Length: 74
Image (cartoon, rainbow, N blue to C red; front, side, top):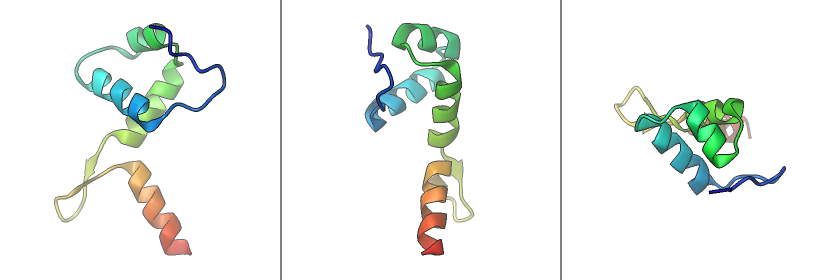
């Protein structure tokens, strides 16, 4: 399956699918070669999309934290 975008942005569903595959046991190397996405990019998606537990027990992703901080600055 060749889904390489050649400089285009990947949609959120694709990123989530890659992260889910990683979390289910696929290696970054395998995902990189199968989907044509660099390993560095996959690691960034994993960091951005893996939820962490907040102080109230609710899970939130680092990407959501950044969005909240930007909103607070406004």
